[in-house]
Length: 164
Ligand SMILES: Nc1ncnc2c1ncn2[C@@H]1O[C@H](COP(=O)(O)OP(=O)(O)O)[C@@H](O)[C@H]1O
Ligand SMILES: [Mg+2]
Image 1 (cartoon, helix red, strand yellow):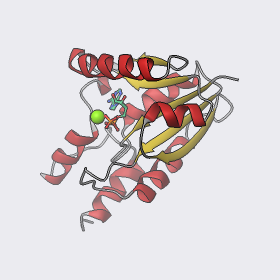
Image 2 (cartoon, protein in one colour):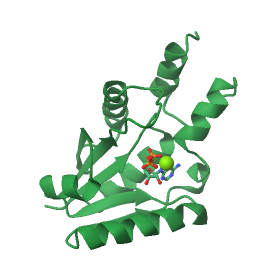
Image 3 (cartoon, protein in one colour):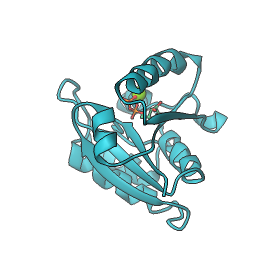
């Protein structure tokens, strides 16, 4: 049984995240989508809302391919990964600009916990410029985010911001 952790803020979950989860499902028997509780950030959605949104949208991923769990965690990622007996941490790489930071994190995590491997995955090109941050920015300025996030997430963004 191979278990991976896919950690992130997921504020909100995008089609880019889903693309990585689907690809990860080809490599792992189980993926724990782990929402980082970060009191420093000012999020659009609460942890509970984010968990609900992820649970909703991953149902569309064939559950026979791999098992998907949604959890939240605080503190050191590698410590959480060990507690959950994970083999690997999955991270998405969109562009070279992601690589530098991700490499640094991966090497630090390896130093802290050599048993856990970091696996980088590339999304489909159409998602290579999609980030939760940019999706929120475009949405709040009145632009369309259709196709960048699942319809249920778009709906929640409208409700959250008092739009119809
Ligand atoms: N469009 C995308 N394509 C591929 N990977 C992505 C995309 N958006 C985010 N990711 C990856 O998903 C993971 C979680 O991202 P995010 O929710 O922004 O949390 P974090 O705060 O850790 O960056 C990261 O590995 C990030 O690189
Ligand atoms: Mg990010």
